[in-house]
Figure 1 (cartoon, rainbow, N blue to C red):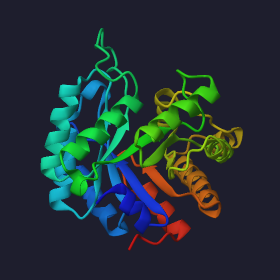
Figure 2: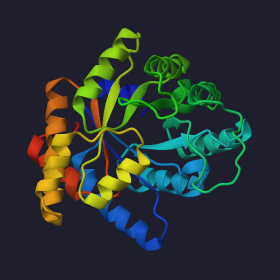
Figure 3: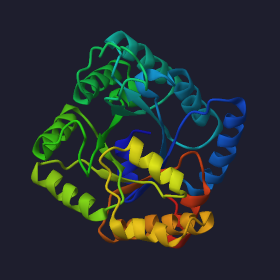
Length: 299
């Protein structure tokens, strides 16, 4: 189903992100987790694509298996860094054959430790969006409408573009190229999201914005987020809550889930269009948030 139709159907979209496992045991564990998520009737799930295409085959494998074995609408990530037009065309043709209707288009980064990787034929994500739109229509995806296309948004800014006005221009370029929706980078400060969303509206961006939420479940996880999501702000009140736990693992997990729950409550109160949970292939934290919020599954 085209994401535009999903957005029209669901006044609030609730979705999850998974990443392809690296081992057979990981695949078994992930599908046990997915079995726990399926009754929540998510609007869709997204599947990550490793830096420089490092999980290309496994991303395709996971997406097609989700289509074959579940009722979940799976949306593969697709990055353009290091890829040629022919590379992307082959991937899209495979997805079209498999019946995949939607793509989350990202610029991406080179793999960690890579000495050299040619940038490819797409200088930025807007170029990829434009190509996806044209190729999806050519391939007859969604009855000729093409792929439903999502793009990334950065409420707290992007480390490579400190000029916040230019950041919004980049996002507007992706929307104008054909994006149907925006999914944000994870954030912990809702005021930053609300301000950024208002600035998007001022820039003429009317595309639905889905907020990315990741509950903290451990100190090591918090540090990993700080490393991976450069520029993400950790409010002092959140850090104080973690510090009060005195290293107790269960207390830290509870504090992190409580913070994420309050984020979601505030977002719902202020009519967010959707919430996208970064699950790290685990179900417990997200399910606890669902229960606390009383969120109803999609029809």
